[in-house]
Image (tube, rainbow, N blue to C red; front, side, top):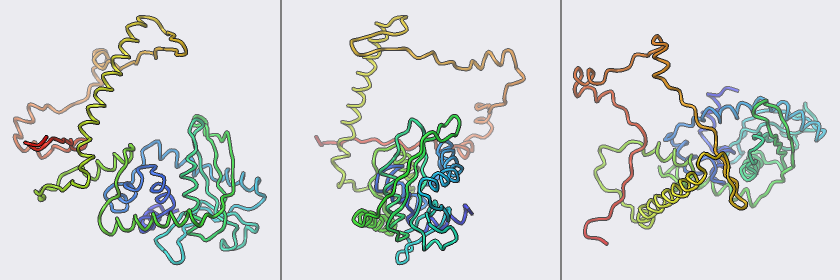
Length: 331
């Protein structure tokens, strides 16, 4: 598959993973989906996510063979780009199709097949899978699909558990997903973003979108519609600080009572210590192996030589800090 062409095609519509993420609130939810489509967030999966995706693609032939054995039908048409006949922005990249005749056109297939993998200790995201498959059924017009899910041992890459099930088209559920797509379209057309939730991926997306300030915008932003949430921020921070202090107090008490012991018991509770972290002592390494030293910037010399020009080399680090305070004279 041509990744560049696929990404360009996918960017022009709402795919099954977009709708599933927006519907379930997973992977940053609707906020991140719209931000990605608007080009405000670069859709770069981390190394672990990329590895999982590659693992899934590599295991698809094996899973396809399992589906064929289980259903006594053929799995064909892998990675097919599909668009709804009357709503071309409704799209889906279908992993494969199930058919009684492997030489028949895909239009004569029984329905789509969706492959999913997860780690042994990871709970399958059934709500996400179901929304994704229902969107595929909406786009393709089929009455049913096969969802194949495999648990994979991350250490060996082997499939240790496999299950499949038939999913029937749900017109009411699909109508809700279509309404969700319409809302996403409205946000995209208006240049607005849905409200973000508090998940890690949504937080990363919000910080990426608001990373820098607009130097030409000196007007205060009207936050009247979220006044209650603005006022709650300070209280929540205070509660978190109190909880952090309570956590430290309890941990310190347990550590003090444990002393040098390796484990302790308190009724149904068992307390154990982890092994000490081992941190590399770089000074000792350099003492024994000075040839391994690296050249670093002499900051005082750079400041003296470049003066204010050194600011041209400074880059933003981390999101801007958010501060909330009351207006003077208000209680």
